[in-house]
Image (cartoon, rainbow, N blue to C red; front, top):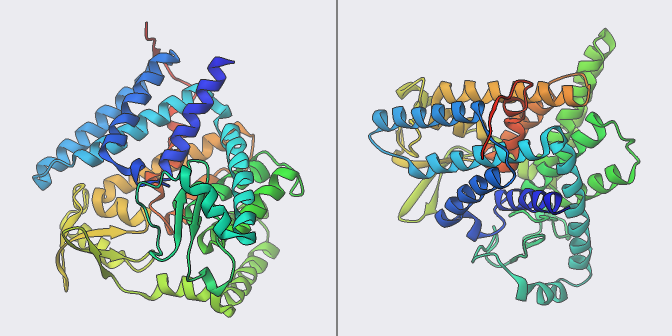
Length: 410
């Protein structure tokens, strides 16, 4: 019982911290603490040190060293960040093994229920809910996207209320325990994929109804599109006939026109598909930001400088028409390609393919690449590769392949 309790506490710790609901979770001190905690967990649970962990850590350190030589700069934060995530992934996957996805669904269900209770209370009386949560606020000074709104984080629930009202709707959005609703929606979509598609639970089971209901309350364009894309993939991959080939494009075209027919949906999607790279205020100056879609022009300039390593883990680069700037992309594919070049992108895709296949084997499911499709689609909304809980799914195939020769700890 103590083993299971400790394991679940560690799971929740990684899950909640990785979704950065509080500024405390983003500090260097917290990153260092996460690394130490994971090392302690590995020895506490007697997980042993697996050869694959040694290989991937050595490879990562070598990659960082090469990047440091090329760029003339040591990116200590990036080095420690991915080291910490690799240790967390290794620990979680070796504690829960192939039951890890089921544990994930269990806790997303619990946190979804908590979030729905909070969401309904925010509709009934936002002021009362705020007064109840304020004494427990651990946001660390984070104010969310709206300085005039309300942002409170209480570990298991985040009240992120915007006065601007998303999509011109007069309803608050459900951020769950995350920093914003979009991030929460992606976690829910992954739980739906596992529970509905891999585990094949009936769509009207209480679990799927709870997950789908919670997803709706996020009002997240990204979440809806990712779920739609995964469902389309699953259907198309199973129905390999002429009728499917004809009908699927028609469904996508119909969905596209319906999506853009409604102003509250087009307003968000149009912004990210039409805007050019733009400057945003940052500490000590400005950051050049590429939107979720159009930032590819900046990525191409990074690859032109160094096809294999991109900016070699640096954030700063020279961009034609702009000058020397730190660059930030709201897109995992762009961020990885920009900072790690084709080497980083190819390795990331290799991890995703292996994990997608292994996850499908766990549930004896075909088609095999649902997780790959999910992460690629989600990548066009967020830097999903730095969410440690998602990173754990990305390394699922690497760490849980059938040959794991452990070096046992004493």
